[in-house]
Amino acid sequence: MTDARNEALTPRAIVSYLDRYIVGQRKAKRAVAVALRNRIRRLVLPEEIAREIAPKNILMVGPTGVGKTEIARRLSQLVSAPFIKVEATKFTEVGYVGRDVESMIRDLVERSVQMVKHRKIEEVREEASSRARERILDALIPPRKVQEKVSDFMHIFSGQPQKEERPPTEDEERAEKQRLSTRERLGRMLDEGKLEGREIEIEISENAQVGIPVMGGPGMEEMGINIGEMLSGIFPKKKKRRVVTVETARGILEAEEAEKLVDHEAAAQEGLKKAQEEGIVFIDELDKVASAGSGHSGPDVSREGVQRDLLPIVEGCTVNTRYGPVRTDHILFIAAGAFHKMKPSDLVPELQGRLPLRVELDPLSEDDLARILVEPEHSLVDQYKALLSTENVVLSFTDGAVREIANLAARMNRETEDIGARRLHTMMENLLEEIQFDASELSGQEVTVDDNNVRDKLEILVADTDVRKYLL
Image 1 (cartoon, rainbow, N blue to C red):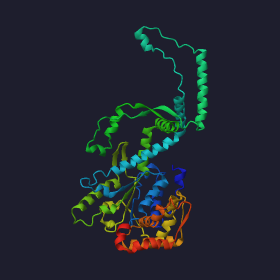
Image 2 (cartoon, rainbow, N blue to C red):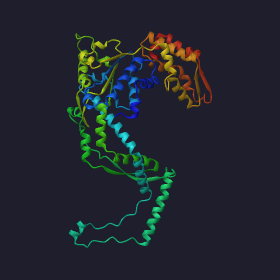
Image 3 (tube, helix red, strand yellow):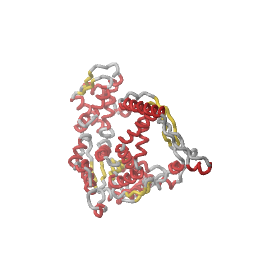
Image 4 (cartoon, rainbow, N blue to C red):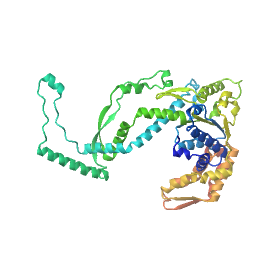
């Protein structure tokens, strides 16, 4: 069954969440919201029908800087699903040609397993903290050494009579009571944070290092085999003593105790299943591996080869990973590309068929750029205000300034390469460069940016075609 958090993720709620960070692009938001909700619905269906329901993979088409990547990134944060972003162009290098396209699935599984381990570590955090506390107290005041006894094994071969454990003397009992009293007092001081700066010597485990690096063959990575890890398991863990402060020791020991408490095998299997059922792979720059017709040679052959290597992954196949085989049938693939030189129809037909939902994102207008500056949570304007507030400078923008920045950015996008909202980053840096440079001298002052300031700083750069090639 789905948990309460997933039950609350209705398509309307998902779109509302995306609206907090991304301006416009209603169609794209609705498409991903429905696709995500269908994955949640599938989890509560009987297994026999759930197996047959394949995810409706999405192809987002639109110019750069309009929010394609941001939609996928915010979506993964919302659902806490295993998510990775890859560029299709990384598989086009000479001699590579998509040979290791499966690595994206192995990366997804690794991310998923780490997410599960992190959650399980948080679940045992209280117990790990308690154990770490005891180890810190042992370092502050070591426990009484118990008198060693000669083992029965030694009696058999030595012929010596077995020594009986003698009861502690009054002095020893008095010393033990005093030690326990001191330990209890130190425990209270530790809990109150009064010993954080005190140095102690602790013993921690470290993995034995293999002296000679071992390289696996070319087939090893495809099989998900890590030779170095296999050899490291043969050698026992070494103990190392370190002198650190109590504050540092607490972090080290809590992490070590949490690792001991977590069932790593169970976490790996849960992570594997989570990647299969909930994983999201965002493939960016897909248009860069599209071929404009079949009559081309050279790089286009490589591009089509990458598409055909991607095809079985997106269609559904088994990929071997270090944690076991994983099926890709129910992983959601969201592909994106500008497709300003190519068309989605230039992709191989089989790959087009596995991306049934096609969403076109709109270019950003001047009004959109103005909204992007101020509306999203932690917007660009808010970021600069926060940065300068650290120097005790109060930065503010008039409505006219925001409108003028958007106007000049839209003009630049029309006259040169359209890079969408990314143009705003360059404009803001050029606009606020002097204020940021002099911020330490402006401490305690209020600085207001109006439309005249924007025109003075940026209009010359926008008008000068030679300068804007380099600055804007």
